[in-house]
Image (cartoon, rainbow, N blue to C red; front, side, top):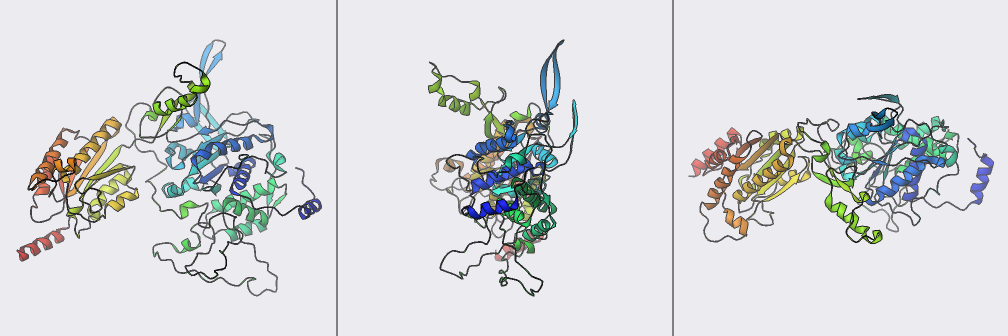
Length: 633
């Protein structure tokens, strides 16, 4: 590799004007170039990228992977419907002399066996919605030296060359497995990315880019990581940081040195690598053997963390970078403070390790498929979460197809409305849940009773089984209409709205009949939508049975005349309609709030629902309240 002499480089740097700070678009192109020249940096993760920019960024990445030869692979999209059969292998038909033969070839995860072909590019528009099979493939391939694949009709051992470009929201980082996130060596917060006027061009790449990229399949010549670079990376990262982040930053510094035509990766390249991914890289302090103290004055300690449950190392970044926490007292009012060595225009609160700051709401065994007992194509099951270009005529998205066709009607010059094959789009579906939890929460029966202990077995069952959740709230003081029940659906019990629903203040009205009616409608929709795929459902009703809003008043929104026992009778009538549902899959439990008087109402409601009664309060609490009630009477 030709390396420019130091004297000439120094002369050019002295005569050239000072370089302007790189913006987010230039940093992104440079990071993609690093991934293209170094297979060890095969994973690129962009946080909070605008969905409209996924396709332009993927095209630039594919162009960089092609190198100077211009050969590039078509990006392959992975999503919620990606399965092992379509990623590792693919069936092909070949025309032979004696007829047509059927063969199995490597899929997009492995790429073609041609040594001159460009590495395949796998694009994940939403990493949080990637299927379990896709997540397992990413954990297996990203950063691996060798991959062994044994599928039906294919057995192959090779080094993974595919590059991954994934997009994820910072709020969803806490839901993903840390094993998956640690595989992405390059992470960039891309919330404020804006395309320049000329697009994400490759003109800003270093002069040594053609030599560093070389030809696909040719032996790579990379820079050597020095001991000073290793020590510098240890200074930039927290001592408790895992080895993967340390290796990733060192490999990124090595790639930057290779792009610059340098034979060795120095501490300056480590600082540049840190700034490239958004880490603050303060200038190293100059020391002499006679120095007895630090070159800069000591920094005042940060105030104690108000949250006692956070780990002590959270105050230094929880996984990566040493930073100073801002205080409420403003020391200088002349101008806003700037971080030392940070990236211009980058918010100090952003971090390439978003999972360190996110609330951990990860699924149980996120890299393991839930037990399936369904039939039919897997891509036609589950809730629709998006659309994609159709590969066949199965499960078409008719609205998106008609909209795409309508855009091109004027240039097609046909008399009627014409649909072309390029207009066809199919639905993208999330994994279909096999379990479901329906909660009917009567806030007026809680009072000073904490029902969290009673609901814990139901929530634990739903969490372990990855069950979908439907919450119906009755008698909340914050309800938009106190005569009607409110409900919402959640993909799992990890939804933060469920925790908020458990502690809402109690109101005056109790539309219990309307809440049971909404629970029945939710169950009917679930059984109709998922069919036999829904194998087990739990309906938990937490109430004292004292409904004081008739069903007619909930439908009309008007309460006329005295109510009496009409609301309770309507609740019993709504409960009897559950008897027509499939009881082999539906389990019903009524949690007794044990409130006097009318303590028999929960038992009658359980008889109408065909379920069991669960003791809501502890035995000692029930006895204390009953004794207190007798004493007052």
